Image (tube, rainbow, N blue to C red; front, top):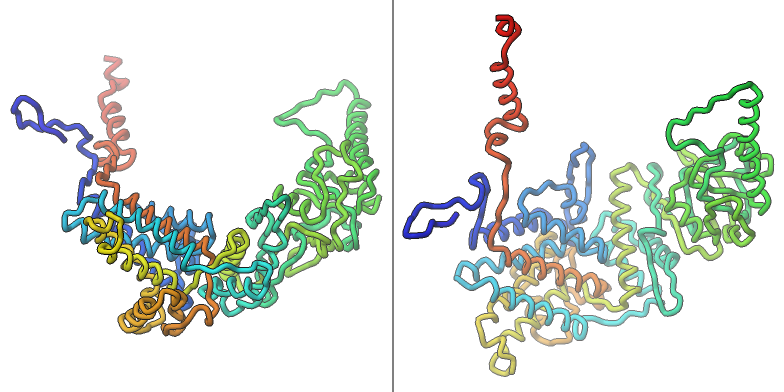
Length: 574
């Protein structure tokens, strides 16, 4: 809305009258409130004493988890700032795979700390400048003073890191098994060549969830497993050291893309057509049989005739596998995927698999490519009581494997249990109090106060850990702050999430990858900055007719009026 010119006070409507608009402080406080609400929702999901959330999705399914991203993914949020908060949890999950709850809690607390400065009239740009400076200092301190290097070849050290990640999850009771599986899986799919290290967990480490049995029955298969059976009952179901051929084409005659009609002038023509179809299938099978494979896997279909020819030649065949499964079998066995049977050569045959076997688990048949010599793909077979338990275990394994990957790509660790957050808080506080000795002009202005707010906000992680295990928050937090203030090298002191007591993380053995912590702090501060820069929220609504009449009712009413005014048959006769 704006006033008309020429001294007239008549308002001129610029925006639609049905548009909702929040401006200035109101918009900022609205965003802060939304962020705090989202953070409070999952605050109890942090640490080893975390509570689980049960969320019903729109389809009626149940999600039972304490993973921040999995919870927020299922929640329907209307406020735009709330949606931004949910987005950062997803970003954290995609980037580093862990710390999804911490990033939401920290972002919410940073915005909560800002509220008092905005109420006092401090401009949002000043707060943003202080937050940017604090972010740069946090990254610098973490890299130089609050982290240690790790030898990725030392298996015991790596297992300790993974264990600290799993310690806060549902899977913590079986942490030894989970750590072994996670570490072995990541080391299996890792490719280290020409100075380039690639670890693609998403594509080459597959989870196969089979309800039944107990969690202790889960194991890592150094190869691939498919929920498939062979296409012909006479085919072999167990072959040692098989020769494997992978196809991306169908072993059946070509069909028309859409409806295809054929007209025959005589009966011999129809017989000849059937004969040609059979000959084309036989030619394809001969191409396959020529390279002497034991197993054929194709992404497309295999006709009954082709299955008969392959079974007669002593070849086992599996059809209609997923593209991703075929790629994993290729990596595990050394076979090349071929698009046409005529192009098959000896070097396309995979010989890296030690055992091909069909096994029956429950009511389902599963195809195993086991005992592979140098597999660069693997399958993690999960067993558990029911589907919900298996889904939660899978999420826990994903986090553990992402942590392992992060350490292997960037081999530096920071202490867990809120120790690094308290160390950063102490360092930022010390820097902001050093205006007399420092040459930095930054701390001589008003920016030092929001800079200190970041220092206070970082304490939310140890505070929440103490709260979630029922400890004495004020006493333990004050003692921890004093510990860190005594000596700069005591940055490893943190909170034992089980009891709420102070422990030295160096002796306690809780370490986290620096990549996770850096991503958490970067994402949280940058999100707080983003939401603080918003000073106007305009939400366009539907047209007035649809608002008053309900969805689709306005059009129906108009049509009804037209029908009433339309001339009838009787009036036409007159």
